[in-house]
Image 1 (cartoon, one colour):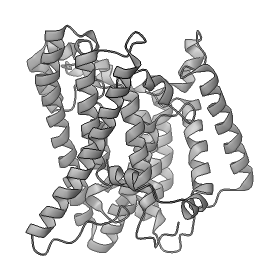
Image 2: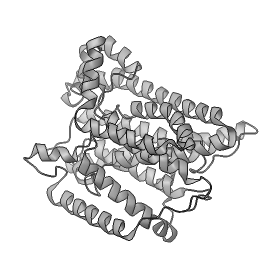
Image 3: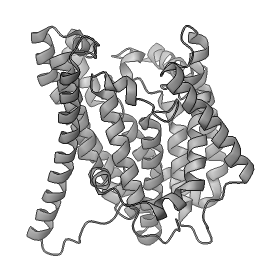
Image 4: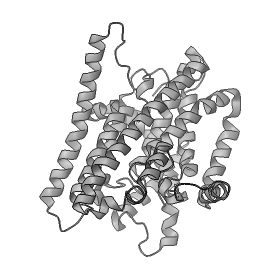
Length: 392
């Protein structure tokens, strides 16, 4: 794929596929264990974060070159505001509707998830508004918001030749996260100012680890369209190494399940998702190298998956919809169970995936109506140049 491409349908399709994988993983059905981490010990979240950062660099850096740093910064901040609005809406839905359903139905799958809110509702609401309290499933948008706020500064410094030391610092933070840097910083702050929430209630994702994926994607996307930048090249030895490692992880995952070494928690920590542990990171990087090497040839020869494109183009509304249907399913049915009928699980999956498509279709229709009613509004831009849709 050349830097002059104007349509990046394959990126939209990838986002759509990742949204489907997230939904099948988060819906409480037996299909979650089957479809979770289908390519090895890597989930859709890693790819989604990286791809969002890549598109942010691709889109907003181009805007900065064209319209100036102020315009780029304002575009990033506008996106952060949109993400924050979605987060507040989702939290309100979870606190009012989902918590009410779970308490009425005595559903531990949700009452455990929202335990801090049910115990201290006022503190939880205020902390959530400050992005300090982030219950499970609702803890991804807050780290996106932080990344979006920091990214303009990163891109501006990167264009001045600072990518080397910034990536080195990012790697150092990731390494620190593997040895408990996040909890240590929390303890230091808590010693000075009493924190309203416990560290585990701030979200499962270790932001100091996951920022490495964002930095890597932002760097690749920002430099993609710089003058003189050609296609990414992967040396043959790296392709062979990546293919070998990815194949081992793929076979291993489907042979033993999503827990690499049952009964060996200390070794399983090397694949930990929340800290983006070393072997998980290596698996992701192997898949990334393979995508860079084989991707252009695959996309030239394959038909365009329009349904996946539709989901990817409306990724933020679809992402929110997948959380809504997942939370409703948890509140009504509880955690996944082998005792539940296959037909019920299949029905939940079909309804959940249909909700994604309906959301994407409605989003496209509303966008078209808005353009018709507002003279002078340009048509929706493709993924490679659409700033407002680059992040979720």
